[in-house]
Image 1: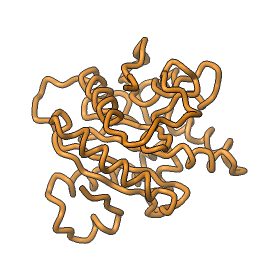
Image 2 (image 1 turned 90 degrees about the vertical axis):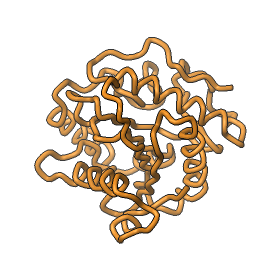
Image 3 (image 1 turned 120 degrees about the horizontal axis):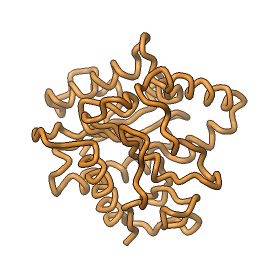
Image 4 (image 1 turned 180 degrees about the horizontal axis):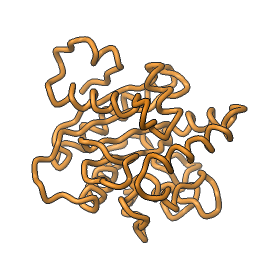
Length: 240
């Protein structure tokens, strides 16, 4: 398993095949679109500055997919602090060929993978982070690091900010958000992100999009946003 940077993919790389090049190209076009501007401004900056790392995994329903993700996430956890202030790990899964998948199928698959990846963690869950997602201070942890996880699927049709031809994850260390929060322009940028989101999606911003640590915020509800305004009543994550 390998992690790639922008230049690793743009240059002809012998380790990559057609679908992987195509997934990256789709991502590049989405995040750099000048007409329909992607809402997350720090993400567009991270891409332009080359702070992202990329990983490619086969069919997400394959039994080995969680193992592959765990290997990539561990590698990223060990190196992300050297990559820049806007870094994220972007994971592309190979397209599922079945036509019966729905947003809800992907939601179940998303939590199944995260649960199985957590079982492969070689380090203890951080002692200062609750392992119960019903606690407002919970967030996903792996290899001693805290992460926010964004997901996108081919079945999202209205929430275009969560729509992508491939099942995709963007995994961002909490430390990146903490650095951003300390910047003088953080409040202004967050307002601009909200404005862009309203213009980008064909549904209003999801009611669960809140700030980490707020009394009524639950991070798990932001990881996978449905195409409507509903959400899971109980997070499927279970720390073993």
